[in-house]
Image (cartoon, rainbow over all chains, first blue to last red; front, side, top):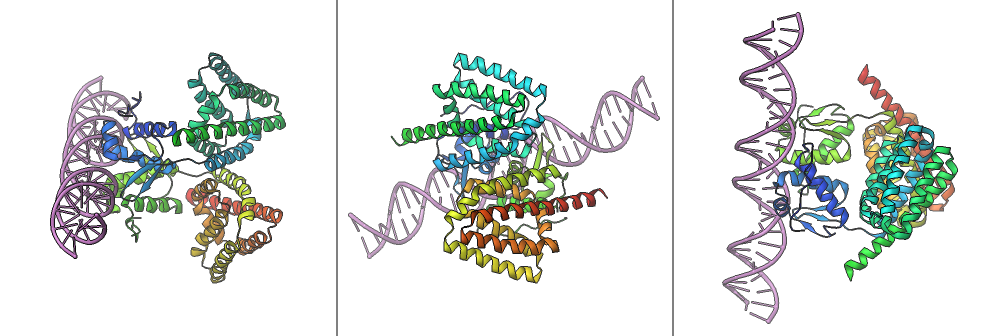
Amino acid sequence: MNTMILQPSVESKPIREIAYETLKKAIITGEIPAGTRIVETDYADRMHISRTPLREALRKLERDGLVEYVLRRGVVVRAFTIADVNEIYTIRNSLEMLILPHIIENATPADIAELRQMLAELDVLDAAGDVEKLSPAARNFHSRLASISGQRRILRVIEGQDEYIRRFSAVAIAKENRRAAAHQEHHLLVDYVEKKDLESFTALMEKHIERSKETCLLALKETKLAQNG
Amino acid sequence: MNTMILQPSVESKPIREIAYETLKKAIITGEIPAGTRIVETDYADRMHISRTPLREALRKLERDGLVEYVLRRGVVVRAFTIADVNEIYTIRNSLEMLILPHIIENATPADIAELRQMLAELDVLDAAGDVEKLSPAARNFHSRLASISGQRRILRVIEGQDEYIRRFSAVAIAKENRRAAAHQEHHLLVDYVEKKDLESFTALMEKHIERSKETCLLALKETKLAQNG
DNA sequence: ATTTTGTACTTTGTATACAGAGAGAATACT
DNA sequence: AGTATTCTCTCTGTATACAAAGTACAAAAT
């Protein structure tokens, strides 16, 4: 990563936002590995911005827990452990279970239609084997489904936690065997919502999350092996 | 709030940290009411600091969801709704339930002793009717209890959410009738941990949280009434 | 009277300057 | 040679400068 390209945004977002998003993505994808010290002047130069917006971006990443601040030494990219993944999925599962009844309750035909539309797009990506686009699309689907519950704070916590493991879940969804199963499960989930079958919905969602976790843990272990080897 | 006193810290924390903590406290306590626009030069002058560390503090508050950023208009202090409180307590209860088994499992005699020590201090404050100190002390007790579980992320989410409602729960603990009951419940909670009686522990904690929520909602409604009237 | 437009003033967004703390290298001393 | 010490250089922490966007208000035009 010698040069870091800032995503030029259509609407004029402040540079600090673009820097924040760019760095966040780079950390989440592993492009900037854990343990990397982020020297401000260095990264400001690479991104062709001044230190001021970069520092503001770093403060946000600090709040996100993606980087760690050491007094008078600046920030360092933080690492992940298996315990982290376990906890994140515990949180995810627990909170997701809470909102499922609300989803069933609130789902309108329009919501269902929109979900089906998203599924159709997932079908195409899945058939084409486009794992690059599949991962964010699948996350999008889950996000939309959860948003029907109207529980904004809970949603925010779930998504906040999910961000940490995005890099592994991206790998997870790409795995051939898991991919097909997950895809089918997505369809089933919408079916259950439509039928307002809370019991089946809950049971499937729990399994779905559990399987996602297993694949994610696998991806993490592979990453760790690759780093140490 | 004409002048805003920065808490002078013993160890040399960066000014931005002090600014962050000061503002956070002021927002949480309601000293800076929801809807207030925070003009950077204004607040920087009041706090006798430059805009740079103030802005970095604002970026953190933004990530916390305590203030809202509007393009080219700066930040505004965000408001709370009853739905917010409900969701926060839903999250809190759900996650707390998750860690209770871990608490029972991990609690050492040393942990119990420390909790009892904290209870003794709470006894004193309660007897003295020192509601100012009682509220943070009670929060501290809960925090210490939860930390025994070793589930750091979950703890972080719980505490992160709790921060939003601190101003109301502070009022909640101060209410005479609730105070006595809560105090007794704290003692019982430790008893159950010591006896490793998960069932009673769980049942009581759930009730404890539920009651806390009710009182908190009451406090919020009073605040709203006071604002509108 | 109402709308438009021009202008001065605020305030944000970004860059840059500068001081001081630490880390590491080079030198002196035992 | 090994350790202490000083010096230098690299960074962070903070302040300040400056440009551009937005706002408010008054004067002019309809």
